[in-house]
Amino acid sequence: MTTLLRSAHFVVRHHLASCYVHLMRTEEPFLRHDVAARALGACELALKGVDRSTTGILLDFRRAPMSTDPELDKALAVRGDALIIPFARSAILVATHVGVMQADRISRTYSQTGTQIFHDEAVALRHVAGA
Image 1 (cartoon, rainbow, N blue to C red):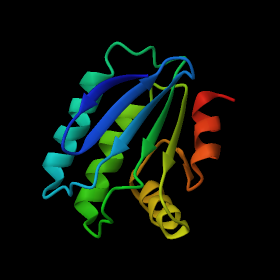
Image 2: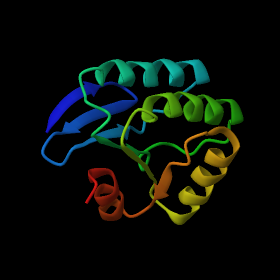
Image 3: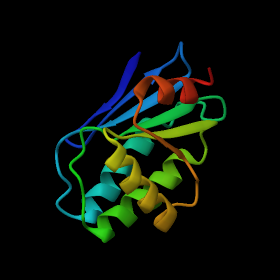
Image 4: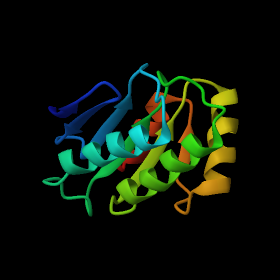
């Protein structure tokens, strides 16, 4: 495992042997949607050397603060789409069933990818690793 990025909002790790990237959200809140867009842009730069056509990506939002800001939700979904579309497999991991419902609502409203949403880490990891 190689850490590609560690910032206030994200930690990005590449698990070469399992063929997936783990993009983990920290507890640090986004105070504005443009900060979220820039933070995801930094993640994209960190992933430049990864062969996305054969690799999965897990967006782990379990530690992220819940959001009620539609502009933030939209910014995260749009920039998240741009980040994950090139990957062979993708998943979003949240902490609770309520988180699954919120992520599903945000995905249906703003996302174009249809990325699967999980609350079970083992199942999500099997999905992105292609197991």
